[in-house]
Structures are given as C-alpha cells and as structure tokens.
Image (cartoon, rainbow, N blue to C red; front, side):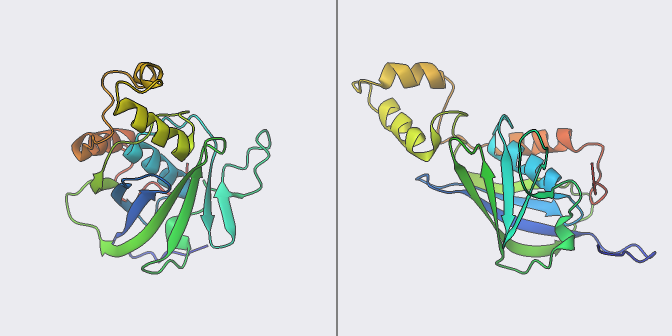
Amino acid sequence: MVTMSKRKRPEIVYRFRLELLGVAPTIWRTLEVPSTFSFFYLHRVIQLALGWEDYHLHLFKVEKMKIGDPNPEWDLQCLDERDLLLGEFPLQLGDEIRYEYDFGDGWDHLLVLEAMLLAEKDVTYPRCTGGARACPLEDCGGPWGYSEMLKALADPTDPDYEHWSSWAGEDFDPEDFDFMAINADLAKAFKRRSQGKAKRS
C-alpha cells in the first residue's frame, strides 16, 4: 500500500484512451480520472462514459493480475477492485489495462495511459474530454452481433431490418456522441466525491 505523507500532495490525474475492441469504425473515449480512484470507481466511469447499463459481470486485467468483484456467488477469482487504487500500481505512460464486460457477449476494452497530469483548479473529475460514436446496445450479441445489427439497419430491404429496428428503437444513432451529456452523468454520479477524495467504497 502507498503511504501518504501528512503534507497534502498535488492531485495527479490519469488520462486514459478507452477503446472498445472488435468494432469498426472505432468507438473510443478520452477519460481523465484521479489516481486516487479505486478500480471500482474506474469501472463506474467506463460504464457511464460508454453508456453501458452495468447489467453484467466485468473484470480488469493489469499484466497478470485480475481485478474485479470477487463475489463468491459469481465465482470470480480476482483481487477486490474496491481495495485497489490506480495510484498503487507503478503505471507508466503507454501502459495498458484490459477491461472485459459481459462475458457472454464478450465486450473487450483497452485503456492506454496517455498522460499523468496535475489536476486543474476548478475542474471536476472524472471527466470525458473526447470520443467518437455511440456505445452498442446491451445484449446485442457482442461485436459480431452489433456488426450484423448495423448492417441490417443501414438497409431497409434487409430481412433482419424490422427485427433490429424494433430492438434498437427510433432514437438509436450509432454515430451519436455527446461528451457534455457524459460529463453531466459523471458529475452527478460523483458529486459527493470531490477530486481525489473517492478512495474506496
């Protein structure tokens, strides 16, 4: 564990590029997260930034370590994400973290550490500073199912068009990305945790 001196240290913020693998065109986000956040809070940031509904199991992989929710009911053999802070790992620029969500559909994400920054005054963290394209819908069948869905939605003559259009709904736009809405969701979710103070749940 990291031992903190009594003198308050400058807040360190990690900037990650988050990419959903196996989907084209690329779905990505740039996220800035306090180094004092636990992996559980990083999980919550990812869910909100992409638009997942947190219905399914998830797991982080950092080198050979597996980090997640070791609930015995789910039989996940992993370190407890609520007890591990990002800043407790010797992360270097360019290091990668894998994040798996929904083991059935198999959504695989890659986080790359792009920068380690001093927190800006009057900026609310965590925050999203960039990205592209909407998150796939829950339970659509993973990258392959989502690809088939987009193919059908693009062609009203496709035999699966009615099925997928009914599933997705009229409001679904695969190109939609609204970082202001994402940041509003992040601010709401972490409103009681000012930058750097959300260490453990």
